[in-house]
Image (cartoon, rainbow, N blue to C red; front, side, top):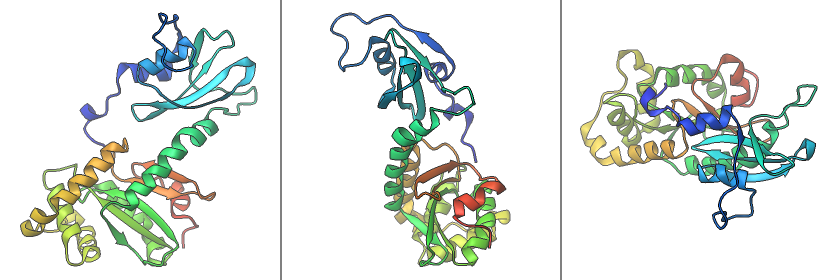
Length: 266
């Protein structure tokens, strides 16, 4: 489920970086801290973190980086006086930018995120020996999380996938108490299943004693989700066919399930 719109509006600068072609004046002598052309330094000063650079067609230098959690790409012209922000395509329509964003930005970000969610407080859903592990941020009140779990059920029941729910409480007032009740239960898997089975009736009944001892775990998961730049539940991390970690934010479409689950539907 999507968070409130007020929390999601990008800054005008972030929108401009995606949509605009920029021609930037040189900075005053002494302001450039790194060995970047002045036009590139202008973007850095506006909050862009450069992850890497590469040779691009036409004598240009390509850069990829991050702006407020969003991957950005831009190209420094051969005269080193201008940058063009956006995607570069060949005459045949090949996207020359996406692979670099994946290699230099999303890949390292997702690798780091995987290690963080791996060490978070989560509930295993499925066989502990299932060969495929999928992490997903789950709010007990999230209808899209519920639908995702229903869609994943054939793989879970077949012992092919273990879905690890990083429990968060962000959508409703009782989301955190429910998540804490599940995490702190004597049998978290059973509690998670109870919430799933009774989702249409309000989910699991809150246990205040458990909540008082486990609310901190949920808040920590909330903070992790925010630090990763995620704005919707479910948000899911999985390994693709090449072993690279990918992230899907929001409920997967039916056609995406096989890629996320790592095999055809059982």
